Structures are given as C-alpha cells and as structure tokens.
Length: 616
Image 1 (cartoon, rainbow, N blue to C red):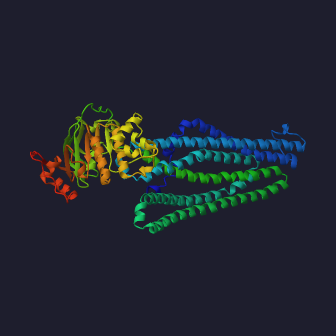
Image 2 (tube, one colour):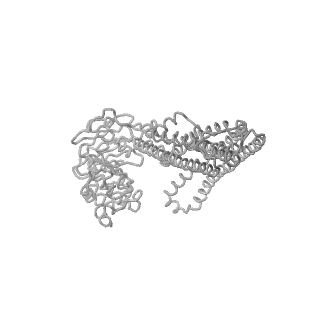
Image 3 (cartoon, one colour):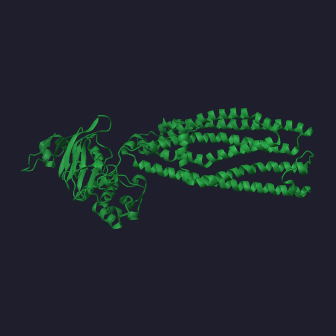
C-alpha cells in the first residue's frame, strides 16, 4: 500500500530536505545554472541572425531598422552572409559546449548527492532495532535505497535546474517576440490555453499510469524475490505452471499500466505539435498581410517561425519535468520517512564502562513481550557465574531465543532487569556491550567474499595466524585445506555451495577468532547431520572452555556436559540442574529426553547425586 502513495506534486518541506544534499555542491549547481542561462540566450541569437541575413542581404527591405551589428558587417552580400554564418556557427558551438558542460555538472552533482543520501540510508538502517526489520519487508527497504534514490537522481540531474532553463527560455523567447511584433506574439499566445488544457489532461492520465506502473513493479519484484528464493519448494511440489500463470497475470498488469502511459504520450506530443503548427499557420497568414502592407519585413516572419518552434519545446519539456517532480516527491516522502524512523533501543548518554575481569550474568525477575502483554518471558530469574556453561532447553516458543536477544539488547525487557557484572545492560554503550559477545546462530549467515573475510568479519586486528588457529580448534581446517584456494576460497551469497555443517563450522571459527568473553550458541547444531554433529560437539567443547556460555539447544546430546541446564516452559523457568539431576526429577526435561531417545533407556542419576534440584 505504501507504494501507491503519490504524495504532493510539490512539498516545500521535502524539497528543502532534498536541497540540503545539494548544498555541499552549490558552487557547481550555480555554475550549471549560469551555463544554462547562457545556453538559453544563445538560442535567441540564431533567429535574430537569420532575420538580419534575410532583411539585409537576401531580401533587402527599406523598412528594416538598423541593428547593433550593422557597422561591423560588410556591404557585400557574399561577405556579409559569410560573416553571419560564422557568427551562427560560433553560437551553435558555444551552445553545444554550454549544454554539454551544464549536463555533465548536473549529472555529477546528482550522483554525488545520491551517493551521500544512500550512505545516510545505509548508516541509518544499521542503527535501527532488530524489531524494525521484523515489521518491514527487506524488499521494501532495498527499494528505498535503490529505486527511490534513482528517482531522486532524475530530479537533480535533469529536473530542477532544467526547469529553470525551460522557464528562462520561454521568457527570453516571449520578450524578443514582443519586441519584434506584438501582434504575431499575440497570435502565438492565443493557442496557449489549449496547450495548457492538453498538458493538464496529459498530466492526469500519466499520473494514473505511473501509479499503476509503480505498484505493478513492486508486485513483480516481491513475486520474483519470493519465488526465486523458494525455487526448491516450487519445483519439489511441481508448482512451476501455476507460478508462471500467476507471474503472467502480474506481468500483464504491468504491461497494461505501461499501455496507459504510452497512449498518454502518444496523443500529447502530436496535439502540442498540431497546436504549434496551427499557431505558425496563423502567423504566416497574418505576417503575409503585414509584409504586403509594408508594416513587417520578411526577416521578422522567418525569425518568428524559428521562435515558434523554440516556444513549444519547453512547454513539452515542462510537462515531462512535472512528472519527474511528482515522482520525486513521492520517493522523497518514503525515503525521509525511513530516515525519520528512530530506533527505540539506543545507547545511554553517559554509558557505564563494561567491567573488566570475570563477570556474572543476572536475570532479575524479567518480563518481556513482543506485543502488549502477550508475555514471552514471565518473571524469569537466574544467575550465570563467571566461566559457567548454561544450557537452555524447552519446547518451541518457550522463550529460549528471546533470552539471548534480551541479553544483547536487541529488545528491551518491560519489567525486571538483566545485569552483567552488577550493571544493568541498558547502562552500557550498545557497541561496547555486544563487542564482548560471540554469537553462533541456528542458521549460519555468510557474506559474499572469502572464507577468511567471513571469519574476520571486518576486524583488521585478526591476523592470518589467528584465523588458522580458530579454524583448527573448531575442526574446520581439514575441510579448508582440501579447497584449491584454502582460506581465500570465494564465498557466494549466503554461503551457497557450502553445506550447513561447513557454514556452521565457519561461524564457530568466526566466534572463536574474535575471542569473546561471553558466548551465545542459539541452536547451533539443530540443522546438521550426525557425523557433522560430532565434529561440531568437539568444536563446541573447545569453544566454551574458559568462557561464560549460554547454549540454546534442541538436541540434548550437545548439552549433557553443561554445568547447569535451564528448562523453559511457556516463558517460565520450570526446572534447572545438571543432566543427571533433571533425569532423576522425571519432569519436563525427562520427557524431552524420552522423546529424542525413546529407543534408549534414560540413564538414571549417579549414586550420591544431590537432590537439590529446583522445580518451578
């Protein structure tokens, strides 16, 4: 629905914000404007030189009024025509040079301004909360940075300044024509109301068509993104024919929308051309009578024909510029709406320094809900000692991943507090807080680049030896050494070409190379095969050694050696203890274990196991 918003044809507030991006280049814009005005003046000179050539040399008129060039022109017709031809050629060449320079400068300025705007958009997107991206589709955000910014580039490069040029051209042409013949100027202006009416109708039709085109393009992009990403499922369920039919319908809507724009352009330009020719016919008839009566010279009539062609061209351009302006206003409204969105989670004005040395993690009566009072965490209280490995298990939706998100301040809790080293996490600088964490997710994400760049992830302090050591410790080195380019092997989008286990091991190496003080593993082994799981479990053992670790897991085999296991159920901490203690309790954890290992008899508690196990 947002794509259908047209916005005002002109909004002064939005325009001021847009012009702010051109302010650093105002000298270049001023030079471009001066060149455009000079080009408009040169467009006036050509018909005047033609008038002089006709009235002085080709058809000498006794009624001709001497001009400023007469003293410098030869009385010989051939010499005089040669002089005027050279002047005409010089004016054409200067107009070409001015037009080229002006166009180059404005294109350069437009690209610079859009570079700055895209940079600001990207920086702003990285400052927004994770919750913002949960509510806004990625495709829409990409459109803001790409398509909408391109529309604004059209406004800067061929819109704003050229509008001034078209208006200047019209003003200069009308002023000279009035000076030459007020009567013929009146005839030319007589068709102007019809031209304005045609322009208004064209604008209305074009506006409706562009709205439909914009919506159709958005739907095509969304459909393509969804179905290309899901091509495996599409082919698995033999849905190709149905998908082609749906895409054909959306594509046809786009074609029909463009047909409306084609029809609008198809009749508008011929109508304006017809009205222009009608005005020239009236000028021809009127001028002929005036020449016959001796009140007008032939040179003036010839000049008027040339000015007439120059008069209607800017009017056609202005109608096109109006469409550019309207599209730019709609695009800028969407772009600035994104830039005006403010993150809800920000660093405090005077942040606390992250404590040195071993730190504990304390969840103190934490309540959290994504929406209203639909609580995902309910009065959650537990403490993680320095160097302790805590595992968190439970059914889907129990709140396991939410605990990690709240600890990293991707979301802020509504009640209670989360403390690290006795300091509320809301009192830390966000970057300083997250710098001390290493996170391995269930769905490992790799960026386009190389294996080494994905392990370093932009941290220049991580040298090759650190990368090599991290890969060796997490059992990745054996795989990397089989590749022709080893750590320089290319990684395609999202790690395409690597197995899930290989991508997960790269994620482990990434976490280890950054040497975090606190480690979070969010179901890091849930999508790998048994053989890879054994490799991952070995890597996991090395990864958590000596670190405070929170391990969210579905596979209970990976967390049996954890110091403590927290059992979550419907947002509440229901049980905690060691693996053997929880089995002895025969509660939720015992049932989870039976579901995963129903063909095996659960191992009972070892002799002498203490009974100090808490149940919620």
